[in-house]
Image (tube, rainbow over all chains, first blue to last red; front, side, top):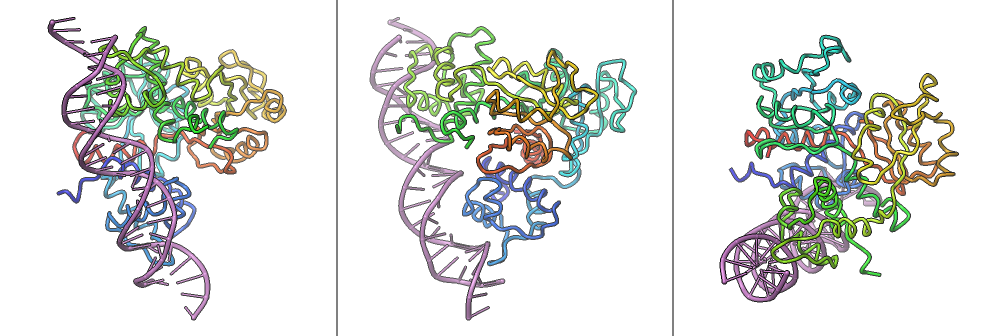
Length: 212
Length: 212
DNA sequence: TAGATTGTTAATCGATTAACAATC
DNA sequence: TAGATTGTTAATCGATTAACAATC
């Protein structure tokens, strides 16, 4: 079974590789070299090659690696076998913008349901999705077996909605509010705001005159 | 000069520490232990202590570290001495949502100007900011010496606007569109979309039944 | 064949961890 | 004093890098 257990670092890098490869495939490319991947991901090319070899993926010397093969392998490792269904909570400005993110579809994620608590928009359609009453959230999650939610509600309802999501069985929350939220340890919260990236780039901005 | 050069890893960790500490201070806390920091950032507590010692920051045994002292130290290292001014490009759904991100203010970032190319909204106010004509962007950046931009335009104008930002002297672009954009190597692009985080969590979702 | 990139080795560096004496 | 956490050591692990023979 050890063969099927990957370290955090490897999974992290595979996510980065996969992201780049799907974009490349989209551009019509068929093969990719370890140095192409290295340039895009800032991961050393020797490490890329070692990762691939460790995963049992072979390339062609002088040519590179087959993009379709890599994508299939990576998806299999991540357990990304079919499209993954998501719910989106919050149909305000942020929610509407997220509904327009075509990248979700491209990477095999489908926003299946949209919820809000605002009676003025419940029942209306946004980007062809009907906005549902947040009071029906728990029932729908139970029926549909969805485990991943995108949180795009207002700051002051962020924690309440999080509690509801946890109670309903959601296991991954992509937090698009810019407030910290809390959940039990078995729920994975990924906060998506620009602060850490902004802080991080400041150092390079002020110390070199360049951003990196 | 070696004393003032920090590795990429250290800067990354300092950004994480700082983010947590500002939130803690906001809650009224005065001191923090290395294990508090460790729990929140998932960085080993011994490594936290070693980082702080290396930076010349001393704690009190049995008590912990002074939060204000840490924040000051970290800000100084990152070169975050005064509020940092930003521009926001794009005043659609996404831009409006970002204007409401109070976390920017809390961490010392001010959205100074908002630009759009839509004549219907140019001149109008959103969250007390007047929307300016994107044609005036280059002049205003030149005068104001702003070096950081948040990109929240539509997918099909993302690259054009990026080119304009680069030409105007912007050095850091926080890319909130979900399309990849290209810029010369001296410009730092930070793409902020949920794909890598989603891919990453899939592995834990399917391999353990839990997200981590 | 010539050019390019893989597959692999070996050396180094930084991150991670456990443990515990020092001391607030 | 008793309890807690720092400051520090030492051992280990994974990441990083350079280099180059193998081979497509």
